Length: 120
Image 1 (spheres, rainbow, N blue to C red):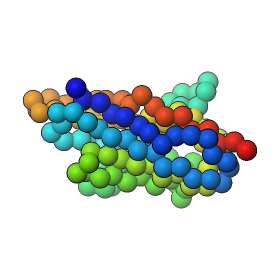
Image 2: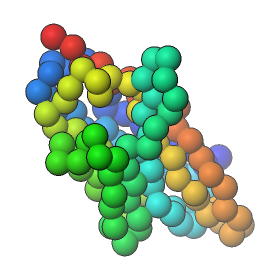
Image 3: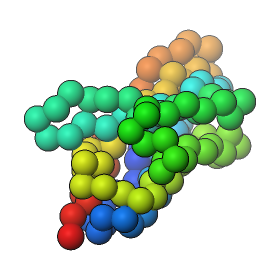
């Protein structure tokens, strides 16, 4: 069974840092671009950024210069390093990726989310 699992969320003070991880596991042939989304309470889910398997990255303007996405293809893992956190970064953070299974079919998967709270 294939799944994406995020971890690393928590409570942090404004200006602090957190590193989130997203691990894809199961009978995987390959993982396509890995996306980070977030959803604040009462708001729509928004794209934070993404990274391709070739390490091309892009970010939403509100996090540029503060957040960095990286990935380890050998471990099917993506990371979201969040620095200079602000209260408005408070949200549940989700990982999403198209994953090609051992039967060569590709499906989109979402993780269960990890809560990030930025507060003093």
